[in-house]
View 1 (cartoon, rainbow, N blue to C red):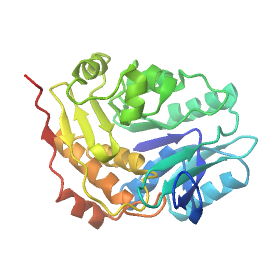
View 2: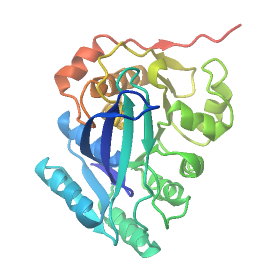
View 3: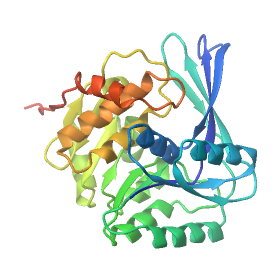
View 4: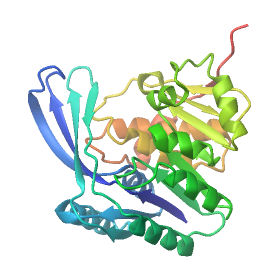
Length: 307
């Protein structure tokens, strides 16, 4: 079973503007969002079932659970007070550059946190996958993901972490099976610019913590992957980009689907899923046919270190 966890879901409003400077809106659309939900939605589109565990609150929360029901995505929602957040994504219609304005989301009590953990305890079994993604809502300790990685790794659960800031910093120390930061998150994590030729010592630190595979997405510079024996680089393709919102979550979905394959094939497939997603509007997942087309264009290469 693949279980995705979304503690801070959202309604993602995508605004296409003539430029990020003027923000004159040319089109607008809203999508159900939240990183774990996006992962489950992409998996569903590609023929893989998952179980989404999430928070729900207010009218936006009902919109999200109605969406999951309509998509026939298995889910369990924990109701809290307040309203699910609405995030705004501004996309420059010429350059495809994006700015995000993300709201904090409703407050979660420690009682809710304990209820979720109790639910996961009864749900997860050895060899299952637990996907820990996205920001932590107000009220939760930054060690939340770290604690759950330790707890479920001890039960032989495959743990995937895609977070940022302190949640990422704490989480990686627990040695999840797979992490997928983007290059900005990586730079914040290690306090220096991301450079493919000098990143190996930081990758070595990750593997020393027990992280089996590290995958770093880098936008127009493609994606990178390591399992402790050098680095693979997947160059970005020239694409008809409609939206980059949710592309990182699509990458995570693809990586999960190919977690048992050699890392080169895992990187290739995850990159294909993410690339195909950028050619759809909003957070709409790609078809398997579109992913297959991308796969035929992708061939990861090892990075040769400078002598």
